[in-house]
Image (cartoon, rainbow, N blue to C red; front, side, top):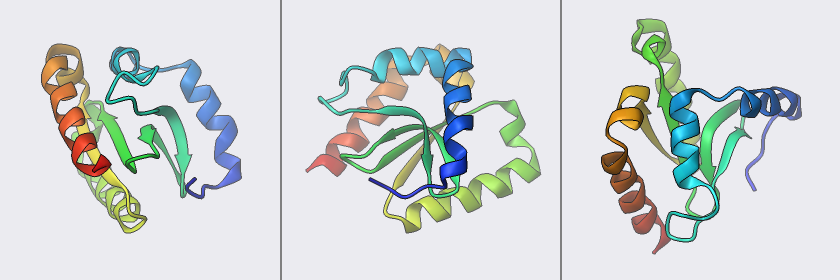
Length: 120
């Protein structure tokens, strides 16, 4: 299991209780090993971050971005976060909330394809 800062655990529990509509919709499709029999976790502390979804078996992180993530400050922070996670051997997939809510089959196809490649 990946390392994380212990003080993030209470916040991750709070975030699990207050998921966005897009997070809930994707979680409904990832939970219970629906993607290639892989276990995903939601609002998982990793390193010094809380990622939206994480599959330890294939070291895959899925992040869902709301409109605020298109602001310059958020873009810079997201890039740093992605680099830190990549340096830990994790692959990060990013989707915006609109994609998840309106294009779920395409989102799941990308997740399935990447997970399959990392699985083998």
